[in-house]
Length: 304
Image 1 (spheres, rainbow, N blue to C red):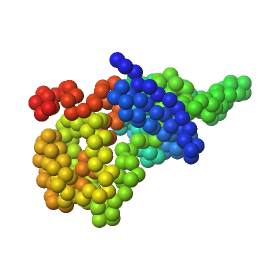
Image 2: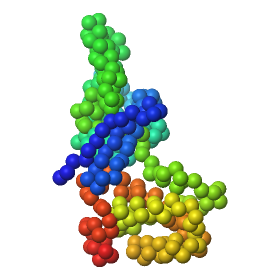
Image 3: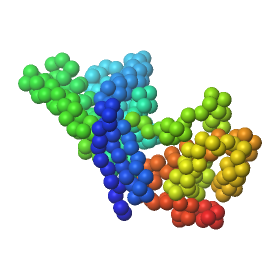
Image 4: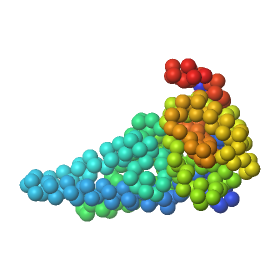
């Protein structure tokens, strides 16, 4: 299977971006998350975990389970809360924890393919080795000798320096797992296609598209539609626009009615949805040049 090409670049505003060029040739660019946003996400995640830890701790004390070995019990409890939280949330929310959702960042596969459970597990178990276990040892009074505290502090310093010293801002766990933390990508139109009147913006988002609607067309049709939307002389009532809307709705079997005057809104919503669909990571390695692309479902094959 052909591997997607990739490169790290610096933009004019000093942001670092990772660009993937999958086999279908449509470049997909991700902005590498800043260290500030990553630290902010980590702090928020720790707060979320601490709240749960505190509640569980109160229950443990109330149940009379806190006796000998309390410190060991709570250390184990902390691990049993942290590890599943990070791994499961990134699996469920496609590379995002609660903290990452708030700060607008996510984890992706470094080679541009789908993020795998093995990668999520590896990077989050390494987080225990990199951060949490050394921090617990360092701040546990009397648990280590002075030279052991020094080595632990040195290790934490190395962990902090590593993402500062590489262009992808990967920590050690990211390097081992083959992952990158990026700004959560949003599917947006080119600037000249986004501009619209206030009244039009109020109506945008009226049309919702499902995967079966978006599995018909490919990159060629998307580019053709973009050329149509670039023409600012076109209005919803133009015969060409109406004809395009009828063709699309018929081919994708879109059942919701497109009212008169909403044709351009429909096309812009469809463009956004279709572009996001083609840019999604699950399409890496699968060429979809046009509507004659071989679909995987029987229904799609029958529509072509």
